[in-house]
Amino acid sequence: MKTGNKLKIFNDPIYGFITIPNSDIFDLIEHKYFQRLRRISQMGLSYLVYPGAHHTRFHHAIGCMHLMQKAVNVLRFKEVIISEEEERALYIAILLHDIGHGPFSHAMEDSIVNDISHEDISMRFMQKLNIEFNGSLTLAIKIFKGNHERPFLCELISSQFDMDRADYLKRDSFYTGVAEGNINSERLITMLNVVNDRLVVEEKGIYSVEKFLVARRFMYWQVYLHKTGLVAEQLLTRVLKRAKELSREGAKLDASNSLSFFLRNEITTNNFDDAVLETFSRLDDTDIISAMKAWQNHEDFVLSHLCKMIINRDLLKIKLKNKPIKLTTLDKHINALKATYKITDDEAKYFVFIDEISNQAYQSRIQKIKILQKTGKVVDITKASDQFSIKALSKPVTKYYICYPKT
Image (cartoon, rainbow, N blue to C red):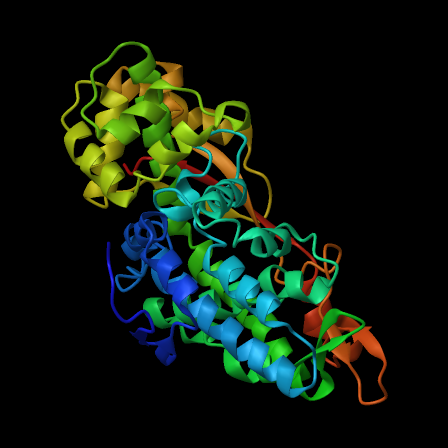
């Protein structure tokens, strides 16, 4: 059994020194489920576009916990009552909010398992840890689910402006080098307050909120929805799809035991039990990369070529349009590929496909960012702001794309 000092300090490139608030948090960070996040990329395959984007979910979770500590201190200074139990639960909930992510984060969400989100898996991990830690995560789970009677506690975990977004925008901006996403997280947190148990931003922080929303829009178009990143993510999901098909047909595929389990079995919400959770906890980016390196030499044309494209960064060509792609254009590229490689229609569709992306920086219909005016009145940011662009940011923008092999 490990013993020693549990009040450790992390040296973070974004915030400087980050302290672990108590020994309970230290024990969670030390747990193998959380340590796995060191092996899960925060931004999937975005490093194929931005070479510096190799930071992990571990970095992000620790950063979120640090910002939550700042938020608790700010709100208490403004005489918002937060008990020690609620404070501890906030730290646990934000620390574990992404613990359910699979390899390469979002890229694998619909490939490893079906009809179950990373949030659902995070909840299952938290419930398992709650048993292991003698029920000490119960309040954190309640807040994570959004069921707490004080809504602002839940909003600090998940809302239009929460500690999750406050960290990942700044962190992803730093590691990608995209300066437009560099928000002033600490300034925003300093402007937080609570009215009627709901989270609000004081009026003097309105320009910081505007910058936050604009930065979010830029980061989505320039980074998260970058066309090269889209292609890489699509190829990765198709690699797993093809591997699943071949595995279930009896083909031998070199893979780790954990990955092989998910290739052979159809895992959904209904059969995602504790045994599956334990297998999932042993799955990370390394399993996928190792498998793709081996599968490059597989006899299957589709699997081998998809893997080579990712490993060697020789990706598909992509074209973005403001209008839906014509089916005649799709068929033209499919037929050309079939003629060149003598493959079937189904095989060709792994390399030629259409899809769409949408960007909405401020989802006002789901949840609003409330501004506390000097008069004491609370209004939505779109009404408080004198910037027309903020209203425009609440409207979704959709783009359409087609991917096909380079000639």
